[in-house]
Length: 308
Ligand SMILES: C[C@H](OP(=O)(O)OP(=O)(O)OC[C@H]1O[C@@H](n2cnc3c(=O)[nH]c(N)nc32)[C@H](O)[C@@H]1O)C(=O)O
Ligand SMILES: O=c1nc2n(C[C@H](O)[C@H](O)[C@H](O)CO)c3cc(O)ccc3cc-2c(=O)[nH]1
Ligand SMILES: [Mg+2]
Image 1 (cartoon, rainbow, N blue to C red):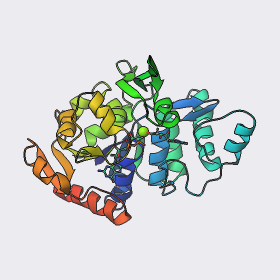
Image 2: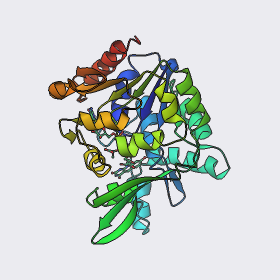
Image 3: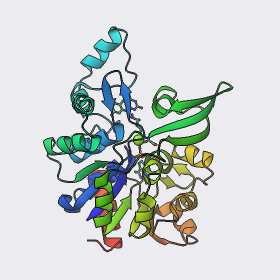
């Protein structure tokens, strides 16, 4: 059994490789829900939806959200009516979000609804939201001289991450409970892969939930670094790691995961720096541009960790 911890871009790229390398019946993905939000009547679970679309081979690979080839008639018409959703939600994508909204309003748990969607999309791997409670990732920032607590989407989509970040907090993570199915899947796993997602806003919320880090201490955990050299391959991970006091390097990634990581997967460019890390290191090409890159990286990880 392999369990993967995922956000909504980096790890989904690796999942495209993994799903072609391992038995999908023995694959579970625990997904960050710290960016979930209501937009009007629509419940958005961006990272869960990206993982569902990725495993169903429907994902729009230019944006890493939404369905490839989708139309935006309803989004545009809402804007014409003066209701700007800000996030570009496609018509097919809207159906998935309406499906979640309908059942959430009728008291179903998010994990139960995602299970329905996984089956409807004929996905063999398990997709498990990190919690059925509400955990919200917030960005404490200095915006034009005023200290403000921003929702992740305000920070990342509206303001393009272009603010002076002071801190990142996971609201309610002390009281939220990990989803039962996520604990079960971690317990049953011979291997846990923490994908190359943003350590602070994608993996951090999952690890902040009671009991998760404890289970991972006794499991074989492979972490794929989202940082190459001194930069994130994409997005605000570098900036957010710095804010939380971590060096933007594979050393900083090791520090963030040091109590649970057994094998750190780093890019060839970090070969020298890797020598001083006190954990096992797999040095390989971790830049995933083509499907072959993704399959090769997935295969390298599975073989190196002795799970093929
Ligand atoms: C906004 C974005 O969050 P999200 O969309 O949830 O993305 P993730 O946190 O899942 O991943 C972002 C993370 O991914 C790293 N990345 C992207 N492509 C590659 C790659 O080919 N190789 C590799 N080693 N890492 C990759 C990237 O550095 C990002 O940090 C967000 O927070 O960025
Ligand atoms: O930066 C954007 N992210 C969009 N996202 C991605 C997303 O909300 C964030 O970028 C992720 O939360 C980052 O983790 C969407 C996700 C969905 O599920 C559906 C629609 C969108 C639309 C956008 C968008 O217009 N711009
Ligand atoms: Mg995300």
